[in-house]
Image (cartoon, rainbow, N blue to C red; front, side, top):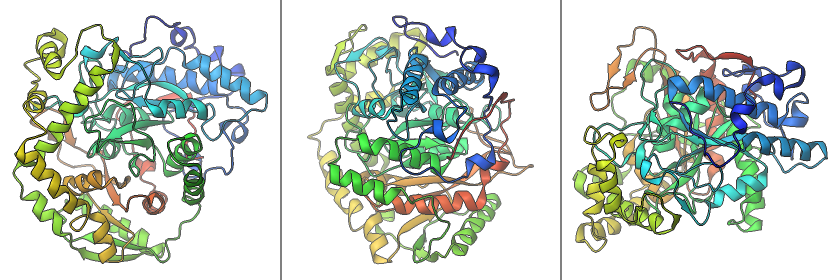
Length: 547
């Protein structure tokens, strides 16, 4: 499926797909596999942009090349649903600013992708993967869009996502939406992209964008990043503003970053924070101060890293990879504390699934109805969750009943006055506090927890507490690994060449701790050097990453 473009804006993208039109003398060439020298180098300091760091590079040239890669690779991966028809015009304008000596900061002229639930009022729709929202518009953009524009970023397009953040259906909709089709992964034919931010993860991993902003309710960013062999960072909630996105849960949703390296994550954060007016100015200054040196050292002296006692049995591949992770961390001066207990885990995992679902579905109903009420342009006349279900079950391209609407129907049946919902809200205080991550870290005098696999319970605790999670590649399934196809969706979940990851959890507001640990793991293991896409990616143009 080719990415869509809004018909009311100039068709800039297809007028400028030839590199010779924007790259004089063909000086810049790109490959979706970045050079390892650039990939692991430290980021520049101060307010440098790409342009002084790489004098031959222009934003227009880089933007045109990413758009060309999207056009080429999206046929296979279905990672991008729309490209911004104004992207090249914006990039040219930012190049003119740069030539005049105007630099907005670390994101000046940098092309970024957005998950399709981050609302923009430009030449693109924001659909959350649903045809019901094609052409629909609220009055205001998401707050983070204004931050991106002030910071000088180029909004490149919208990444495919699991429809309604994966909560529409129970019939295997991982990475599928009616607007974008089925996203698939990079390292094995038909592999699962995973997570509702899967399109963004695939696009970044395949080199279609410098980085992407995704959203996470529970593990949408981190799971997507794992399958794409990149860094997924869900920061402390509202470090990046989530106001104005299409929520699944307004209380839990967090805007985060997907990028190929930790220095790229830091570049995006340090580009956004100075323009993030929802954060008081003194706090912004402190954040920049605390985050700036994150990738400047391979030492973790004095840090204590906890390994939970409740890890499940691991495959030989993950056991070997996690052993290397711990060896790297100890060599960097960290102290490893084993068998960390967390009382809330067993209490949470023993709950019936209906109890766990009650909070999400109740809040999802409220979030969808609220967003629909904000629409000032509404071509399909979708005003309520009931309208949405009726549209989805009757529109032929929504693939119903092959893909059901059980999630939407469960949300419709909820009531915020229901006793179960209120009981679960009360229990949540325990998982945020005494039974959760921060109190556990305090009890064992640890800075972070680190795990060799995705743990839904800990991801849930982090979501409830608004604390951060960072996912870093730690290894790859070797040749000879059995290929496992998931029954629910028919996608490949395990196969030779697919990456596996470490997950790092920290305290809310202490983002620098998880990022420091993540950087040491990334640089110590250099897993991306051995990742090989199953398709040909070279277009003769080198991407710039980790600067």
